[in-house]
Amino acid sequence: MPEKKLIDLYPYRLTDVNPEFLIFRRAKGKVYHKQWRMVGGKVKPGETYWQAALRELKEETAITPERLWTIPSINQFYEHSSDTIHSIPAFAAEVGAQEAPQLDDEHSDFKWIKAENVEKYILWPEQRRLIHLTNQIVTTNQILDDWLVPFQS
Image (cartoon, rainbow, N blue to C red; front, side, top):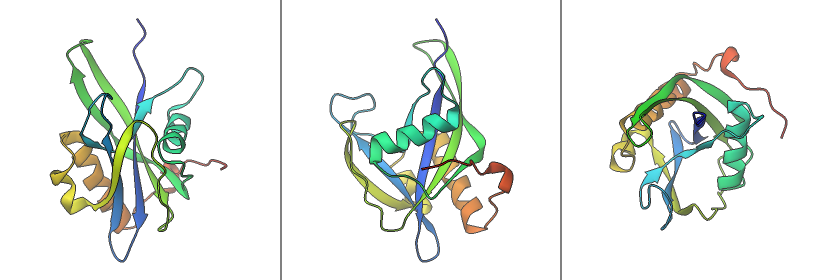
């Protein structure tokens, strides 16, 4: 069985000083029901990881980002049911400050949170770490040109 390819995407908007991150509560009957999570999903055949990240953002929120970039780290975890170690590329998507997500059937609610509050919502340690890392990169204006993903909306 081929290994599933996954992506994580951390949408954020710029506010006064610190960015706010968009998180979603998973809907009843869906995997991770009731958990707060960021955008994530599977890479389809013929897609690159970054194309999957853009597609997932549009499918889950109907938002097109102003900027998409590769976070210089990965989400890595072990899944016992498949006996697989997943290494998941992580992306950040800067969205307009006034954007309002349109939820798909995978989610029942959304929130904009500051990185300092992530532990109240996100259960997965690697996802918490990636939000903190993204926050640090954004607030120190350290996004390298090499990380930017050129795309057309």
